[in-house]
Length: 604
Image (cartoon, rainbow, N blue to C red; front, side):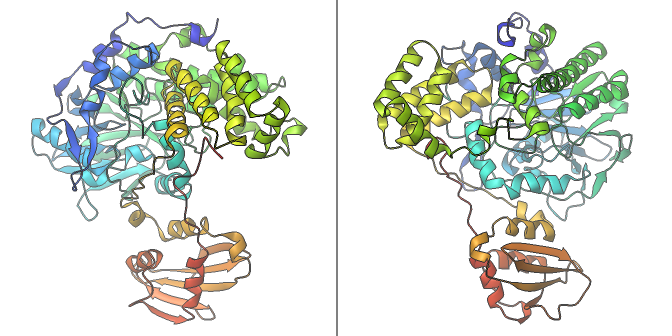
C-alpha cells in the first residue's frame, strides 16, 4: 500500500465547516483592478469549482481547491479577523486600542487595499497602526503599500534577517524564479477544469503591484514580547523553516496562535519548484514541537497566513503534533535510507507516510509532495551528485538527447516506442523518452504534440497542484510557444539597502566581457551618511563599506540614494557631483547582462 492508496474520508466535512465559520461578508465586487483598469484578481475565476470533480482533476486536489476558493471577511476570534480568498495568502487584522494591526498584507497593493476596505466596511474606519510581516516571502509583504506608505506613522515589524532574505529570494535570482514560478503557479493557464484549479496553498497569486517596506522593529529571539496598539504579542523565532526568516506569535489575551506558514492545511515544500534555498525539515519539525509546547495550552484558535483556522485546544495540539511528525518523518526516513546507499530519486519511490499521516487531509501533498520533498532533503545533505561516477560529467540535455535518439534508432523509432509506453499506461517513462525526442528535434510538431498529450494526462491525475500546473504549462508551451512574462518589479527596489543594490548588480556582470577591466569607484551617499568602495577585477564586482575618502579612486561620486537609483536606471550622471573618469561607470553598465524572463524550459 502506498501513500496515494491511503485516502482520507471524503465524508468528513470538518474542513468545510471551519473554512466557512465566522463569515462576516463576502467580496463586494467581482474583480479587483489596478489604477489602469487592468484586472489583477477575479473572484469569478473560481466559480467553476462549485461543481463536481471532473475527469480532468484529481478528486482530492479538487476538494482542496474548493476550500481555498472561499472568499470574504471572517471573524477568527474576538478582535481578530482574516480576509481570505483575495490573493494566494490571507491578510489578518488584529484590532487594537486605536486602530488595527495588519499581518501579512498579501501579494499586491491592489488586493491588500481591497481587503482592508472590506474590513473597514464592516468594522469601521480604523487606522492602520502597525504592519507585521511573519516571513520573507512576497505573498506576505508585497501588498504593504495597499495598507500604508513610507513616511506614515506606522510601526513595521518583521523577524530578524527579513530584508536580507526577501532580497536574496526575490531579487538576486528573481528572473529565474519568476520564469519557473510561471510553471508551478500555472500563471498562464485558463481558469477552468482543464487548466488552473489552484495552487494548494490558495487559488493563485494576484498580478498587481508589489512593494516592500523595511521593518522599524525586528524580532530577534523566542519569548520576545511586543505591545502594538495595546495588543500584547509573544513571538517564536523559526529561521530555516518555511522561510529563512520567519516567526510565529501568540496573542495571549485573545488566546489566538498565528503559525505564519509553518503549519497549514497541506504538506508544504522543502524545496519549492520555482527554486529557493533548501529548507531544513529537521528544524522545521522541532520548531513545530516547540510551538506546541510553548503556546498550545494558551490557545483556543490556531490560524495561519494560508487556509482556514483550527479551533479547540485538543484539535490544535493534534494538528501541531501531526504537522511536526510529517516533516520529522520525511527528514529522518530520507537519511535512514540515504545511509543504506539509496539515492534521492530511489528514496522518493519507496518512502511512504505512516497511515495516520496519510489519512490526515492537512498532510496531503497539494503544494509540496512526498516525492519531491524527499529529493530536496537528500539534496540538502548530499548535493546534486548521486554518487555514481557516470553522473559527474554527463552531456548537457540537448547533446544527451541527440545520442539517446540515435541509440533508439532515430526520431520515428522514439515516437513509436513512446506511443507503446503510453498504451501500456507508463506515462512517466513516455515523458522521459519524449523529452529526449523534443530536445533532439525541437522542430518536430509530432514529438512536441505527443509530449504535450502525455503532460496533460499526468496533470489530470496529479494530487499536487504545483505538479499539475507544471505539466499543463509545459503542454501549453509545447503547443503554442512561450507566453511573454510580464515582470512587475513594483516598488521593491526602493526598499533595498545600498549593499543589496550593489549585490544585484554583481550577479549581472558578464564575467568574460569584464575580464580585461580593472578599476575602483568610490560612492559617497550623503543622505545615508555611508560610503562604499567598489572594484571591478577579474570579472568580479566587489563592494564594501568604507570610512576612507575617495582619493585614488578611478571615479568618485557624491550623491543621494535616489540619485543612485537614477544611475542604475541608466539615466547618467546629470546633476551628480563626481571626480575622475565617468567612462568607468559606463563600462560597468556596458558589461551588465539583462536577465531573460522568457527562457526556454520544455524545449532547448
